[in-house]
Image 1 (cartoon, rainbow, N blue to C red):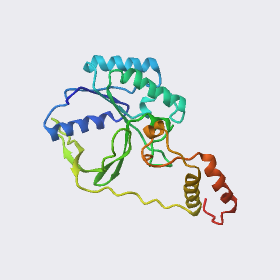
Image 2 (image 1 turned 90 degrees about the vertical axis):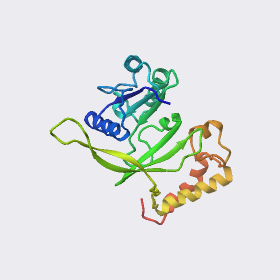
Image 3 (image 1 turned 45 degrees about the vertical axis):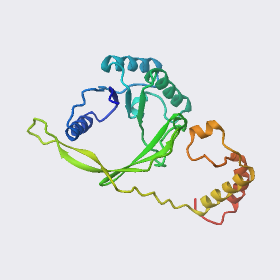
Image 4 (image 1 turned 60 degrees about the horizontal axis):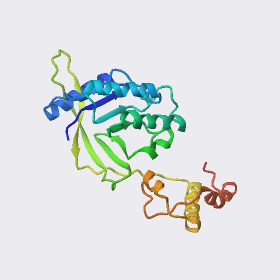
Length: 253
């Protein structure tokens, strides 16, 4: 269904204009129903979030889809690692940006030490209806679903990058990248773990067998992959695993 789109851009304005132009050429149409902000917002602050909501209404008569790119640049002075700040961010989006059922798409960075999850407070993941991890391995970009709250996870999708020239009336040549659907199958990363981590996983499975219970409805709603499985309190796992910490013969950290 065609609808108006609002894009809260916090960075990369020059690159964004090129990408939009490239998409207009690819699909032979104008992005006339898309409004892009000139600066980032502070969505942790309720007053600022309310102003953004009013601006979206004025700019495009109430967009049906709102992109926030990136979460960090629209987080104001808040701390991404703070559960309190992240909860304020999520609450303000629900209260002001999604007040009429709009779809909100967050662009967020992965962690520095763990590239398999979004950085900052884990309370964000619990608030999401779905999450996708974007990976680039030239010439492909992969889109992998990592959370699906109310639907089955779709298969990973792959797109091939293509550089195109922009038909701007300019003496200087401008180019950008566009994505084309591909039959390429994204590969799953092979993660190697040391002996201590293997023991941690083994004792976790033991704790699950001995003390595991069915996950609650809230758990099933917030975390994918729990259907048909059991959950176990961390204290049972620690009781089994911690004795290995001092006696582990491996010198691996």
